[in-house]
Structure formats: C-alpha cells, structure tokens
Image: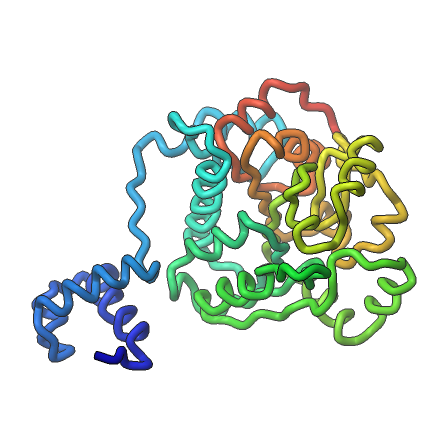
Length: 323
C-alpha cells in the first residue's frame, strides 16, 4: 500500500492534536475520520519519525548551585548547567546541553525576532530539539561562513533553516566558506553586496547562538576542509585552546594567528563582546574545557549552557579577566 505524499503532515497534525491540544485519540479519530487504532498507530509513527520527541527530565537535571556560582564568578547574565548523571560519554553530554539550549530558546519571552547562528554538531542537535511552532516570526541569519571545502558538506544551512522554519520565520544564509585561502579574497567577499548585506543583518541580531570548537582533529572545521590536522597542531603549539566562529583563541580569548584570522569570514569576536544582544554559548565535553573558559573570561558570551563536569572545571580554576 502506497504512503500518501502528505503523510508526514498528517502525522504532525495528529501529534499536535494529541500532545499540544490535549485531544483524546477518540476525539482525533472522530474529527479526522479515522479509527482509534489508526490514530494510535500514527502517534507511534510520529515518535519513530522524530516528529515527536519525548524527554523524561529528572528533577535534578540541572545543577542550580553551580549555575549561581558561574553567574557570580564570571559576570554572566545566566547559566544553565545540566547534570551529567553517571554518564561521561561526550555524545550524551552534547545531547543534553543541546536539548537544554533548545528549551532555553523556546522559553524566552519575548521570543527573539532575529537570531544570529554559527554552526556545528551541537547547534544541529539544538535545532532538532525545537518544537514546530515554538515561536512566530523568528528569523535566522548566519554569522560566519559555512560552505564546505571538502567532499563532506556541512549541515549549517539546513540547521539555520530548521530553526527558522519551526519558529515561523525565514533564514538568511551566508554563501561562503568559513576560512578563505587569501585575506584579499575575504576582503573582496565582504565588500560584495551578497555577503555584506548578510553580515550587516547578522550584526543587528538580538540573540547570538554559537558553540566553540576544541582542538581535536575531528573538528567540524577539519571535516569540512576549512583547515587540516596539521593546522590544528600548529595552532595548538601557538597557544590556541579552540575556536569561536572559526577564530582560534588562546586561554584569555585572544586571537592566536592574525593571518588565519584575516582569512576568516564572519562577525568578529568584538562584535559579540560589544553587542547589546544576548549571546549564548553552548559547550560540552572535556575536550572543550579550555575554550569554554576562554569564552567566559573574555566575555564573548553572557549566557552559558554547559554540562556539570565543564562547570566544575570552570569553578575550579582562577577567574581572571581575559581582555
């Protein structure tokens, strides 16, 4: 039996009626001219397809004492610390931080009108955790380049589109790689209207979302061909602890390679530091402990969403000013 072309839309409609509108399966069946058995089956299919995500949240999912300590120590607007529980698996921690980020975004009142987004695995998962219709009229703009220079495409554009689509808005994409071969190429692109208009719009965002990268060879910048493992080793030797928007920084949040930074396309870190907008960093895993600290001490973010081990690392090290 063939599946109707609009079957996913039907699954979504049934799921909304059941989970958000509080209708019973019998009521849904009557309104949509289905059997009760069919409605139950469609709800199961909606869960299997990822249209519905059910999350069981333990009362101790967050660590309020650590959140308060982070806010006080680093002068943050807010901090969210997710409990690690018994798991130290990096992917598990990434998932929990991403879901906390999605919940933070959906709970914002008023909802942001324009969100500036970077890209990467954590933000991919955040986008996947947003409920369709979580807001109305929320537009999204990319704040740094994301086109892949390898055979492995990035998911940056689809991630931005998902956030915008579920928020009832549109996405404005930045049609360029994160890092160029020559600084002169970057200058030409930034003066091109197609890129300049996007960056000008990005600077006006009222919320920024980013996830800094660590110094491992499986970095998304390496996967997408922006740099290679040799560059990572060279940058680490020069004192880099990770990247923010593709810009490699040291433990105090300072740029470590002026030439590489001159070839990096996107908003500067100073734009994030000086913005009146809320600037949210999502960080998880031991590999990002040092760059997480660099982000908070140099005031690149004013909201930190992280995991319990990362928070413990931050609170166990001296909190010196970065800039």
